[in-house]
Length: 150
Image (tube, rainbow, N blue to C red; front, side, top):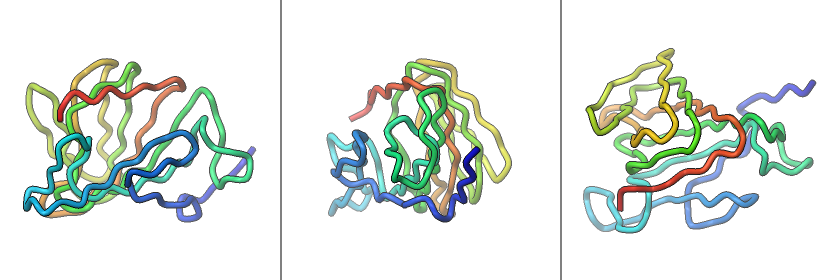
């Protein structure tokens, strides 16, 4: 057994840096919309890898090949661009007010809401314009993300 407090897990600002084989993105743009072509994010997003197959034994967090748990902290108005995953994704709204969207529409989510995306469903998620938003993102191992919006 291993107990990890989320407050102890390092936070990684999504920039064009590499962390244990995973690329992270953070946009800095003069465009007021925050958009920058070729980057799959709009705004500022901070990631914490609590359970992940890419963690080393000296990392704070738990190494697992079968479960991934990421904490994503979105600044007001920040969001991912449309993407799909080859596996199901479960999101738990942890703090703030967020938006989860598919091609069919958007849903406003708040603390305690649980969101399920089937494998290969085109979607995005992020914070409302009024509130920062933190979500717990859960996958089974072997997840791949395919960005479908430029």
